[in-house]
Amino acid sequence: MPAQQQKWLNLFMKVLPLSLLFLLTGCSERFVLLNPKGPVAEVQKDLILWSIWFMLFIIVVIFVLFAIILWKYRERPENLDYEPPDQHGNTLLEIIWTAIPVLIVIALAIPTVKATFELEKPPKESRGVEPIVIHATAADWKWIFSYPEENIETVNYVNIPKDVPVEFKLTAVGGMSALWIPELGGQKYNMAGMGMTLYLQADHVGTFKGRNSNFTGEGFAHQTFDVNAMEKEDFYKWVKETQASAPLLTKKQFNEIIQVGVLKDKLTFSGTHLAWVDFAKPGEHLDNIPAKEKHGTIKLEEVESDHHDNREHESHQHEGH
Image (cartoon, rainbow, N blue to C red; front, side, top):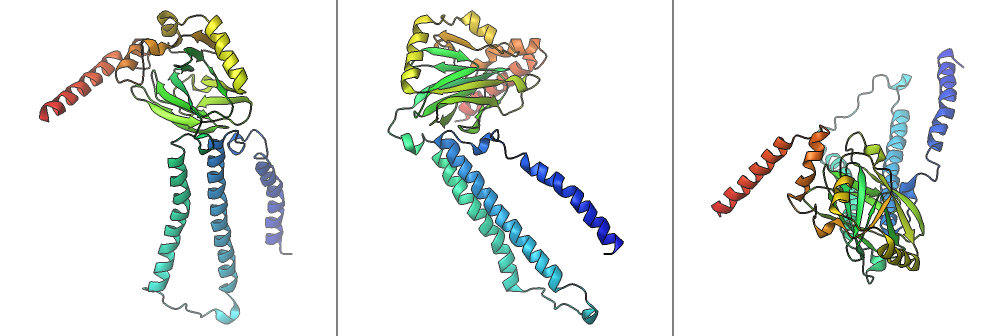
């Protein structure tokens, strides 16, 4: 074997084990995206796998064609003076290489669009079941969950019943966050001054990790929470016990909770902050601005100026109509 070929073979034999080791990093149960524990995550997993296998098929076809062309049209002694035919303006070829990417986009877009609209409603497996409504409010850097019907509020954890759809009402006190529970479904943004809705459901009992998937500063890595999926009987038992024994949430306690900073404790209250403030309504999230100004993350005069400009703009639009 020539020395140059031997050199490349030795390099390949050294790189191959490292490549296999890299691939093995994906063989862990901690790869939660492909370990769904609810119908929403199951739909999204199928969509991810469809995209992966479809694109892998395209890659294989390309490399096979690449190898065939390299071999068939390699330079040989008998074709040193070969001149390929001029294919400029070949209508058939131009139609083919234009149609192929269009078909690829269609094949990926149809299931994606279908799944996206489907997931804006409760999971079809539980369409006849009344969803439990939970307001999920993001604050720097903690999560606040309010149960308006049950009159309960928790911090940094949320309990949900198994096999019951959950209608999360998403908003934020300050910066834009994103609620993400990988084993139950994809993320959706929490934004101050507006509300978003996210439907999720657990069909397994267990504790699942939730987090903020949108970077929000120095405490971002600690903005996590636990999702405890339990049997319906256990969930409603917890509701009754909490309503009877948990301390009543006060405005003072709530204002302390939403101050900028990491909160590692898990807290439980009877009553919710929705009784006096709803951060999904425009303007009400400004109550937390002084705390942010103290920590140097925002300037109060800038926010007030922007808010004043927006109000003037809305007023001019109204007068114009």
